[in-house]
Length: 86
Length: 306
Image (cartoon, rainbow over all chains, first blue to last red; front, side, top):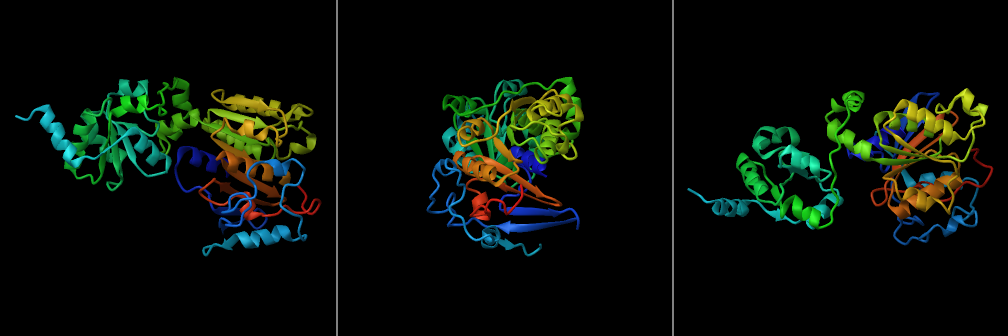
């Protein structure tokens, strides 16, 4: 999948997975597509970015803060909206 | 009888011109333009615009339909100095093509403006056979194959995700593959990391990976990078590549690769796998979200196994 996407991007053909997350469940043998939105508050690519270089990676902290254990899941919920066609 | 001067003046009335800088800008912005080089094949081979398709002036009316399938796509024509293509553009206007633009000053001015060109390197007999199935695909063709052979891709990780990706890219004839991984091959890797074999246990993954990829396709220039990607080497490493494939196995690296690719304007083909579930997406700076839009904060250490 990554190889096909790479070749498409290099050649400028087809519709690459930009703004789309494709998930694959091997046990259920199901693919699902989730539309991804750009987060305007993203610390990197948002409208007022706080990350402007790689300094954040120097002290071992990769994120902005340590939140609740489900911070990971919250992020997904905030950033994505299920694709109608699912 | 019309003089050449009169014919050119007549053509200029219906054919707008764009200078090299304007055309370069429009192409960089992703505008859909069909660029046709109307010079003779030997002139084209010596150097041309990367996006251009070569249809010599004499064949233009016969072959333009195959190069431009949608007549509403704006067509840009160029020749050496911009005169032949001006008359050719007028001929296309007469055929009914809506927007036909002439590259002002032609290829010569493009080169003088310091804009990039590519030289047609003849494919070897072996390459013609090896990639013959690509030539049959209209979206790839001879032109696409040459583009792949000129492309440079950095693979971060030569493990479960990097292995199949690297094999497919090498087979497809992506000309340069940087293979970055600081690990050595362990017997527990072999059930999924198909770049490596039993005899490679204990060897650096980039060493066995390079050997496997070269054996598959000797056309590919594999650059082994036997080190882990870090904040200190990431910017220097990615800058020489057209695109980055993230096949890493931990969040720290994913955030690092994401941030570096965004800052350097490189597209990041992201993939991850956990047990029976996998996911893939593409982070293209300026065109869509990044990894931090998807996961604003990393999971606390220990919560998610890598």
